[in-house]
Length: 157
Image 1 (cartoon, one colour):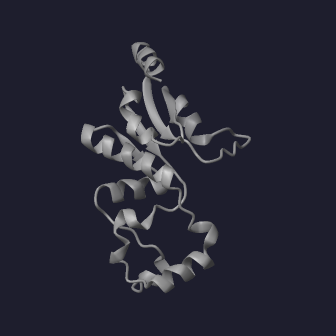
Image 2 (cartoon, helix red, strand yellow):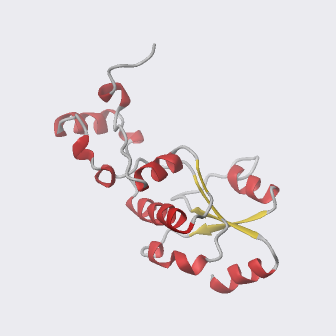
């Protein structure tokens, strides 16, 4: 990977890192985010989902930007879920009711949090879409609601 990234850098190409998905579902229009990166003249570099890769992110340098997008829920222990007003029983009920929406991918978490922290430490441009913005929020010490309907009682209707 180091040789490929260095060669692309010598060619004066902008490298944008993305974490890979557990599964790719290509649509007729192609992989939307990858297409946009290429359309704007950058090269997408996909960080593979293999154990321990979060420890090797320095080998992907130079990194000109990071794009993190949709995905599973973030592991609640990463944003201090004890701050939640929900009881363990309520959390279990939410997970049962919304089973398809509460999946957690710990490997993706480790990769994306390492990328977010690297961006913050080294002032690397970062774009977070959906889950990606939640990752950045939590990496900066923020928290998340696990269930808006249950935890937020004051809302605008």
